[in-house]
Length: 105
Image (cartoon, rainbow, N blue to C red; front, side):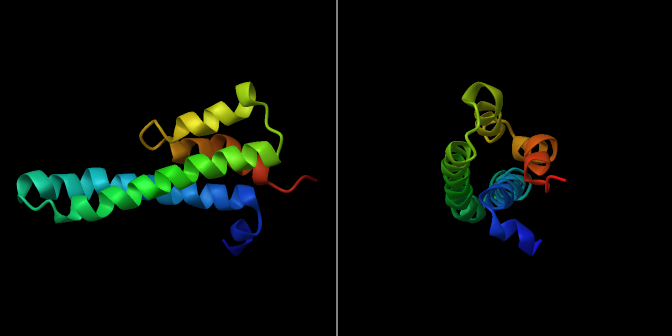
């Protein structure tokens, strides 16, 4: 896991994972608590965390795209679209980012 911190693509993958986890917590824990227990405190805490991770993912995706010279129509738009689709960051990590980050042999 520590090898992911050494590259920008690795850090992007970590951000995608964290963004996806924060959405899971928000949708399946915080929102039900808000409506079934009338307790909005967890949504108030998780909402900004998820929003911040979402923005970090977008900025880092653009940064990595420029650094890696990704063609926007081939790669960058897919990575950016993934964070707008619920749980898309998990999918794009497995289908695209993991293959790009894999050491070339």
